[in-house]
Every structure is written in structure tokens, then in C-alpha cells.
Image (tube, rainbow, N blue to C red; front, side):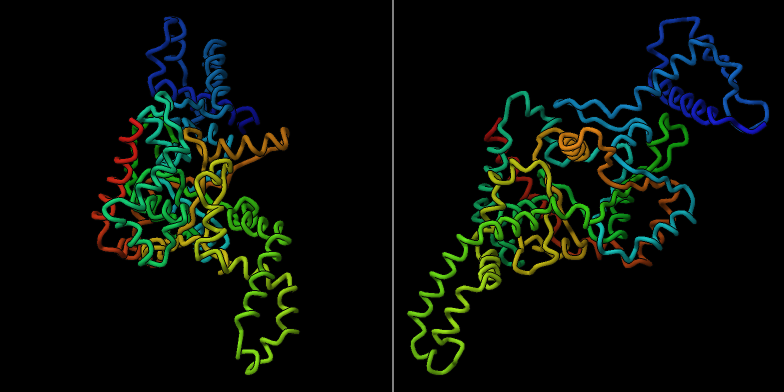
Length: 441
């Protein structure tokens, strides 16, 4: 007999009920008759593995419906508790998901995404984890909301300490590697990269790099695991084009263009000052004639190029990237890819360069990224059917095959972490963080 449309849903409900029970739910049941009825549930005799509806009592069905209903809602969030997804049904609240359970499926996925460069990817070694930043996890575990600790003040103090600790050691390191130590985002990126708790999340433009981090530190398959989701890792991806309007680079460019009259005023003053200093240059090159200089001074495109070019030297870029100006922005992302005139100095070490690093910002001290973005979307459009990103959930039984494939894709430990002083830098950034936390104890 072919299953009816309702049978797959019934099987899903019973699977979720079983996972709940195996995770400690059975011990909470006080109704002896209900427990007896649960022990009498059987599978269909045809070997299909489906639940035999005739063995389900009304009480068992009601309990299964209640558990299924709870999974239709996202996890409850609390400032003193790290929430996790209990099932893929629950994770559906925020992500458009696809499960990868076989080697051919994994190979097809690699073929499709390995060469893409227009997506942001993030690999994580547990599919059940929500997208908390490392600072959020630290904030929640240490119950900083109950103290209370001012989140913005904490971050501003972290920036100050990072620049002066040990005679400005980190500042010198950032500058020596092409970063800008006066830029808060550049400082945050180096702190994040060496495991200091920060409000940013690591993403990458490289799908193979994301696969590496999904496999890194992942636990093995647990045959007796209570919940199905425990046996998966995840790779998230967002098409950059769809996320671009939320990018800090785009915000900076829009802010510059929106302030064109003010920029032109300053630009023209600079051109006029140059005219006063040109001296003998005007005799040797027509470029410096009064006519050309005046034309240049009234060129909007030239004024914008001049404004952008002033960024890396510590001007407007650093202003926009200050913690005090980032804090009101719920979420955004930072990337140095694109216009060379709008750079934040994120590629400030060999590891970030090889990993093609890009970072997302979350201003909340306790609420994960997917929740923040979802709430923003609903605020603007209450009827929106919104998913934060796409998500591939890869079964952990495929990790041995994946680890064999990564070197063939050019992804090895030596490639991901080319620097040799990891331990020293981790000690430095953690000393900076501990110093800051002690000031707010």
C-alpha cells in the first residue's frame, strides 16, 4: 500500500517525539497510562519503517502533535542561555536547508560551489549551533547582562587596550602586515582571527575553506544520538549581491555620495591650495594650468575619488568604522574586496588572505545573527517569508571522505594557517581581552 500524504508527516511527528523522549523527555512523564501506550507503538509490518497508525492512541497523537508544534517555533532566546536547534524542523524557521547524506551528493555540491567567488560561506562543525559570535557566547556564559556590563563601552575599551597592550605590540603587527591600526574593524578582524571574543563572525569567499572549518574539530557520528541534527555539520552561504546593501563598504560609498556638496567644498579648497603651491610646475606641464585646475576642482567624480582615496590614511573610513558608529547598525559585513579606495585593512595577516576572509557584524550582545536579521525583515515587512541564508547540512559519516578531498582542492592545514606564531598571538589577544574583562568585573 502506498503511503498517504499524511503518513510522512505522522512519521516526522513520531520521530521528533522519540528524539524528545530520548533527550530526557520520558523522565518528565507522570501519566502511567500514557507511558504504557507509548511502549505499544509499533512499525508497519511491511518493513517500510513507517509508524503503524493503528498502534497510536489519541494521547500519544496529542503528545506527538505538541512536540511537533514546539519545533515549528524558533528556539527560545535568553540572555543567560546559549540556545541551540533541536531539529531541522526548528532550524527551518531561519534557513533554507538541504541535507547531504551520500558521497555523490557531496561531490555534486563541491562541483557546484568550489569555483564560485560571489558567495559568502561559513562552515560550522555542529548543525545545531545558532550563529552566535564568540563575544556573545562569552557574554552569555559569563552572565555579563546581569552585572550589567555596557556592551559599547566594553568594545571601545577592548579597542583601546588592543592598541596599547605590551607597548603597542598588536598595533605594530597590524601596521607591519598592511592593516590600519587606527581602524576599529581592522583591529577587530585581527582579534577575531586569533580567537579573541569579538562581535564579528568569520565567513569566506571560498567554499572549500568553509568545508575545512565545517570539518575542523567535528565530533564523529553518534549511532545512539538522541537527535538527528547532532550528526550533521553545516555550511551556510549567502549570495553577496543580495547582501551588498547591508555591507559597510556600500554604506560608506553611499555616505560619501550623499555628502558630495561638503566633500566638493573641501576638495576645491585643497585644489586652490595646490594652485598656490604649484610654482614652477605650471610652466612645465599644462596639467597645472589655471584652466585645467579649475576644471578639475569642479569635477564631481574627481572629488569622490579624492574622498575615497583619503580613507586608508585614517580619515572618513576610520570614522565610519568606530565602535560608536557601528553599534547602532544591527548587522552588516566587512570586506576588502572591490573598490581599492574603500579599504578597511582586513587582509592584515597571511591567514586571512589565504582563507579569503570576510566578516559579519552583530551589534546585539546576546541575540544570534539569524534572529537579528529576521526581526529586521519582519519589522519592514511583517508578512515576509524570510530565510537568513541557505544552509547545507552534511552528515558526519561523510567527514572522512571530505577530509581526503580537501587536499585535492588545495586546502590543507598549512594553507589555512600559514603563519607559524599562532600560539603567541593567541596569548596576546587573550591577554588583551582578559585585561578588558577585568575592568568590567
